[in-house]
Length: 256
Image 1 (cartoon, rainbow, N blue to C red):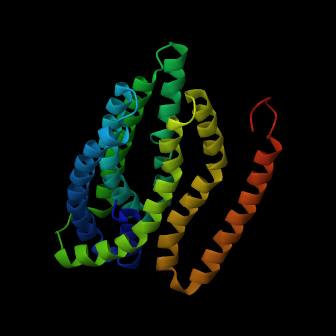
Image 2 (image 1 turned 90 degrees about the vertical axis):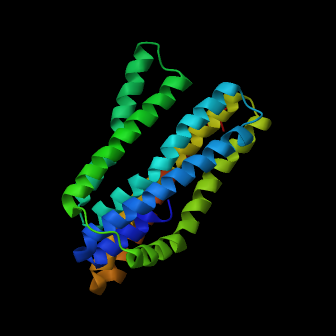
């Protein structure tokens, strides 16, 4: 995603008068990034999943489309955060999460929930959420002119922060990629549920960080206070959640 969320949110917060040009410029960048991501991922999926069931390769190809359009999602999120449209941003966190959950429950009730239907639901509702984000960002900022100078400056800023995102994504997915070679599917499923539960607060803290960046960028005189306050809040919440999760250990025989 070229650090789109960080770059767009920071620059919009610092220079709100350039919002329309910024959105247009990053839409062009997102088109290039989306096409490149889809092409590369479509080529890598059959290689990375060569030892798996052919159906899994097909699901991977479908999800590759979503991974490409994630670039647009980060651009729109960055635009809304930089414009301090926090209320709408918080609502977009429920799209597609809440509708996806409801649809999963409905399909499960109808005995139609499979891996294939789950992937299709995820991709479809995620793309719908991206469209809604885009409409809101356009309404807030409007369209402007493409600026090569703005593209160079903001892309360079984004790339410097993208390394952390790439490292986090690789680290969070590498175990699941390797484990099918040595573990049964049931064990992988339990492991996935456990790691997802333990990463709940990490996701919440990440959302706080996304909001904190544009706030600190605009309120320079209170940057230290804002950052330290958010840090203490996240550390305190992490301790509470860790204690709660640790207390659940061993409640089910054979589950560690």
